[in-house]
Image (cartoon, rainbow, N blue to C red):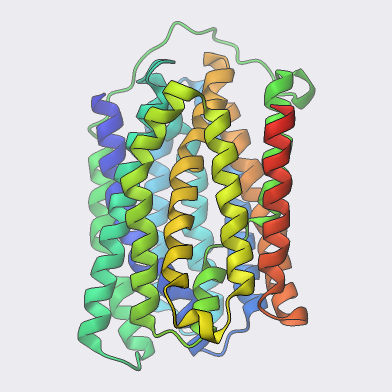
Length: 383
């Protein structure tokens, strides 16, 4: 349990840092005159680079039978990436910063999640991942709150230097997050020295079907920054967009651990079906949103339900993979799952940006909503 708490505190501090800047990036880029297609390019390539490394870092972790060094390296990389945001004056340095940040995430995720899985049992794994996601998201909420306070103090009409100031402050919790990880103690397992070679056809049939469904869903699950950009284009101020994003993170934090308990009791499949149904509803809601609806309670409801979706699905996808996987392939298969979802973000974000440019802001959300429905049907019938 101590390792789970330490990993959670590290994630709390790192996400505090990340979420101080993440919701501001699309607004910052828009202030520089950057089109939505470039936003899709930045997020797509950044997340896909992370995806590739998630697979390799998980495999290396299993072969070395070590989790901690790779996790520390990855968190340190994410800290360095934020320096490039501070020095950015055009979208190109934002691109480099996001790439380094996400590469760091790609290195750390599978070893860290394997640490959590190693420190838990089958009967407690849903709660373990739920607790970690809850702490992670508390940090995200705190990061957004800090950003809100800074933006409120700076007033309207933020300049690039104002954004840079926030980017610089975000380095403080990121640095302490890396330090905390040194207190983790790795658990040794009597596993074979040789790790079986990863082959998709040799995976358990249930896991193969699940990963295919996840891949389909990922194609419609573009970067969250398109949700924030949608509100920006509907006339919402930077401060109000941050408040919406805070609502999302608070909902996520409050329900992540209860969702894990429900998964342990009723099974992850039912929760995931519920989660993907909520996702479809939210994306169709963003597609239908117009200037009149944007001035009502509807945006708050959409971000709240989107927080429920994240709380229900993100930790439990990993828990399901960890349950099915053998101990000596656990980090590798967690990395494979992360790689599939991450690789999907490149075409998903590129498609979202192109659909937005060609057919208007509703198009990417209609596309994502239909793929979410497809994933829901696949989970209900094939898993």
